[in-house]
Length: 112
Length: 113
Image 1 (cartoon, helix red, strand yellow):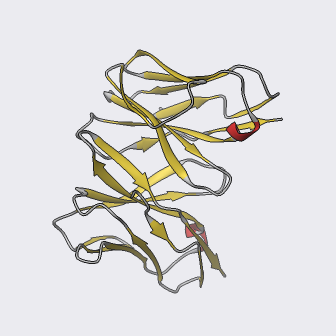
Image 2: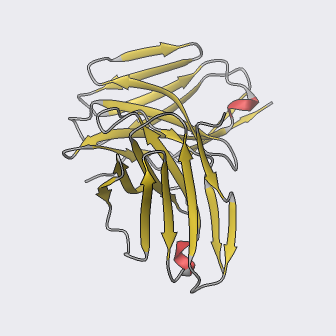
C-alpha cells in the first residue's frame, strides 16, 4: 500500500526538542523528505535524506532513518514558536517514474 | 521572483460551475504536478506532466483536465464542480522526472457551495 503514517499532534514548550516520527511503506524509496506547512501557506521543503544514509544534520534539524523498520524521524532542537506548523514526511515511490507519497501530517504546537 | 506561483489564491463558486486554476514556474523545470489537500490536510498527487506530456493521472475524475501550454505552465480546469471538490490545490515542479525534490506553490483554496 501507499500509507505513510505520522502521529497527528505534538505539543512542546519553547526551547525543548521536538521529535516527529514517520513510518513509510516502500523499502525501495530513494529519498525521504520533510516538508513544513505553516497556516494558510504552501509546503516548504525542509530537508531530505538519501536512502543509503542513516542520519543527516542541518542546523537545528536532525533526520534519522531506520531502513530496516522503515522509520524516519525529524528532530528539531531548541524549538521556537515559529516552528509551529504541520510537518509532512514524504517518500518517493519508483513506479517507473518518481512519485511522492505524503504522510498524514503532524501538527506541531510550540507554546511559550 | 516567486518560483512557483498559482492564481487565484482563493476561489469560491457554485456547484455545477466550471473553473480553472493556473500555475507557472520560473525555475526552468521540466516536470510539474498538481496535488489536492483535503480538509484533514491529507495531500495526494493528482497529475504530473513532463515537458508538456501527461505522466501520472491518479484516478482523478475526468471532470479534471490539466493543460500544459508549455513546460513552465500547468493549468487545471475543473468541469461541473461538486461539493467534494472543495480543497486546497497545490502546484509543484521538479527539475525533471528523475529529480525528486519538488517545489510547491502557495496553494489555491477552492470552496464549492
